[in-house]
Length: 198
Image (cartoon, rainbow, N blue to C red):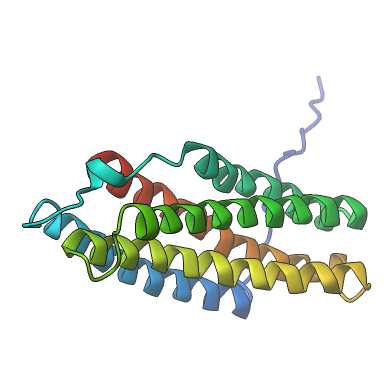
C-alpha cells in the first residue's frame, strides 16, 4: 500500500537582520533604562529621610485615571502598528490619534498634580529630599512622554499629508517600541512613588 508524504505546514521563516533603527532604539532604551534605574534607586534610598514635611503620604494622590489613560495607549498604538502593516491608513491615523490624545491626557494629569503640589502643598524641588527625588523621577518620565508625543504628532502630520505609508511600517514599529518603553517605565514609577512610597 503506497503512502503519501505529508508536507509540513510550519515552514521555517528566514531570519532577517533587524533594521538599524530598531537596533538604535534598543540601545537607546537600554541606556535610558539605566538612567531610570539610578533615579528609582535614589528615590527609594532617600525615602523617609526628611527632617521636615510634607511627606508623600500627606500630599500624593494616586493618579489611577491618568495611569489607565497612559497604559491603555499602548493598546491603541499596537492597533495602529497592525493597521499600517495592512495598508489601512485611515485606521492607522485614528488609532495613532487616540494614542496621542491619551498621552496628552496623562501629561495634563501630571501638570495638574505638580500645580497642586507646588501651589497648595508648597512642595517644590527644593523643599526637601522627597521633593527633589519626586520631581526628578516623575519629571524624567514626563520628559520622555513629551518627546514621544512630539514624534507621534510629526508622524501623524506626515501620515495625513501622505508622507507616511505602509512602506514605513517598520519605522512606526520602532517609534511604537519607544512608547511601549515609556508605558513600562511608568508602571515602575507608579509602583515606587504611589504604592511603595506612600
